[in-house]
Image 1: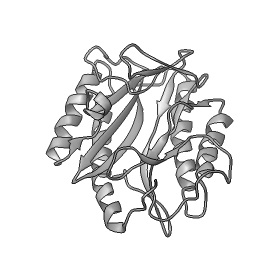
Image 2: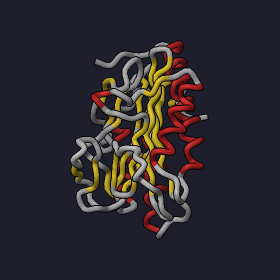
Image 3: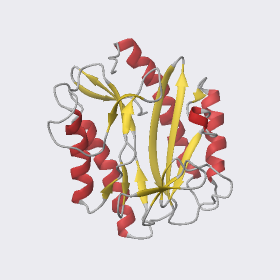
Image 4: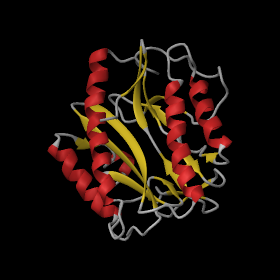
Length: 250
């Protein structure tokens, strides 16, 4: 069931989401040659505590870390391990969640380490982020969920890339994952009616090859089945009277 949020509740989600935004901004300096995913994990954990928040992912469903750090063919839920040492040209997707005063924020960003190896990698990140904003643009009262998914899918597929189907966005509020599910594909005019007070995490996950994924033995890390590279961008938004408001932006 979808619960509409009051302006006060939206403000509390925004507080948590802005901590996430600050974490992701800070982590850009760790997307460098020789740094590790664990360096990101340590920095994020320290900053969240400093801001009076709690890591939302740690312990959620048994997940053991503050961050998800997914590199190259890893799509989502990658472990932030010391063994993940970044090299030039790596594509590093970082997903972070924070709970503050009972409300959740959740956002993701993909970085390149140094310079892009090729034009395809550059375009992958560009179009994945662009598709996020295309989806957000459609998050207005009176539209439907399918309008968001269709906007994301159209942007991604027009560039020759694939939208991951096995993982989707979601509602956000007093739980990390609330209704409704927000798919990154769909038909215009289909799905649930969007209403003022909805708070959504829109998060395109995009593969440069096919959208099929496989799960690694750790039970969490999803990788592209064909080994192609992937990118992931995410924002929390609130549907307001005057349109979508991005909550997870500094």
